Length: 379
Ligand code: B12
Ligand code: SF4
Ligand code: SF4
Image 1 (cartoon, rainbow, N blue to C red):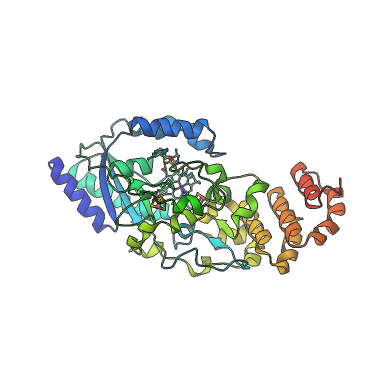
Image 2 (image 1 turned 135 degrees about the vertical axis):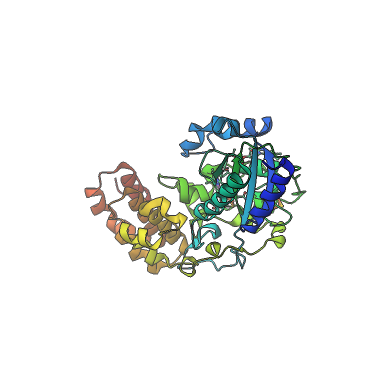
C-alpha cells in the first residue's frame, strides 16, 4: 500500500483529472459546535417536513456513525456557475425561473456520483483502501466537512463558498478507511458583507449563518409537499423550482469558474420556460420533459402548484384562463394554487366560479381557499 502522503497526493491529482474543481481532506469527524447547531436546527423545527433530516440525525452528525471504519473524508467540489447573472431578468414575465442548479443537462447527483465512483474504484484498486462515495445521497454534513477540508467556508447564506470558485459549486465526498492528513480548515471571509441576508425574498435568515428552511423558496418549491403558506406566496415571485438570490449577490462570485463538465451546462428549454405550457403538463408529459433532471423529483402536482404560484405573481391577466382550468384539477394541491392565482389575476372570474365550485368541493383546504379568494362572501 502507498504511504499516506503519496496516497493523498495521488487522490488529489486523480480527482482534479476527473473534472472536479477543488479537493480537500478532513478527518472523519465533525465539531461539537456543528453537532450542537444541527440539533438546534432540528429542535426548532427549521427542517419543516424534511422528516428524513430528523430521522437520521445521529448519523448525519457523525461520519463514523454512518460508517464506523471511516477515518478520512475526501471532499470534492464541482462548479455549475451560470454564464449570466440569474437575477438579470424582467419582472412581470409570462415565464418561470428555474434555479441554476436545476437547469443543467443532467442531475448533478448522477454527474458527481459517477465521477466519484471512478475515483473510488481507482483508489481501491491502486491503493487497497476501502471507500464509499456520497453526493447528498446519505446523511452527511457535507458543508461542514467541506469547510474542515479547506474547500471553502460556510457563508452567512449557509452555503459553502470559496475564494477560488465563489459559491456556485456542488459538493461530494469519498469516505475512506485510510488515514490521510487533513488539510487546514478554511476560515470565514464574509467580513461585514450581508448581501445574501438582504437579498432573500422571503426573509428566511433569522440570523447570519442560520437558515429557516420553512421560509426558503428552495424548500417551498422542491421539498415541501403541502400547500404553500399564503404569507409566503407573493415572495416566491416567478421562481418555480429552487432559488438563487442569496447565491447570486455574493461578491466572491467574481472568482467563479464556468463548469468544465458539459453535463452541467444549461438545457435551453429550461431557461425561462413559458408558464402556460408548464401548467398544462400532465403526469406523462411532466416525466418526459424532466427525465434526467432533478426537477422530476417533485412530481407533476407539486411542480404545477409552483407554476400556478408564479402565474398568480405574474400580473398577466391573459394567464387567468390557465389558472381557471386548473381549479378543477384532480389534485387538491393544484386546485388551491389555481384558486389563489385566479383570484390574484382576475378576482371577478374567481368570484364568478366560487359558488358552483363550492357546491362540488369536498376538500377542506380547497373550500377554504375559495372562501378566502372571495373574501369570505361565500360560505
Ligand atoms: C437540507 C438541504 C437543503 C434545505 C435546507 C438548507 C440548509 N441551509 O440547511 C433546502 C431545501 C432549503 C436547501 C436549499 C438549497 N440547497 Co441544499 N441541501 C440540503 C442538504 C441535504 C443538507 C443540509 C443540512 O444539513 N442542513 C442542516 C443545517 C443544520 O445545516 P447548515 O445550514 O449546514 O447549518 C450550519 C450552519 O447553520 C452553521 N451555523 C449555525 N450558526 C452558526 C453561527 C456561526 C457563527 C457559524 C460560522 C456557523 C453557524 O452550523 C450549522 C451546522 O454546521 C445538503 C446536502 C448535505 N447532505 O449536506 C444540500 C446542499 C447544502 N444544498 C445545496 C444547494 C446547491 C442548495 C441550493 C443552492 C439549491 C437552490 N438553488 O435552490 C439552496 C440554497 C439555500 C441556502 N441558502 O442554503 C448544496 C450546497 C453546495 C454549497 N456550495 O454549499 C448541498 C451541499 C448539496 C450538494 N451536495 O451540493 N437545501
Ligand atoms: S435560496 Fe432564496 S429563499 Fe432560500 S435563503 Fe436563499 S435567497 Fe432566501
Ligand atoms: S454574500 Fe457576503 S455575507 Fe453572504 S456569503 Fe457572500 S460574502 Fe458572505
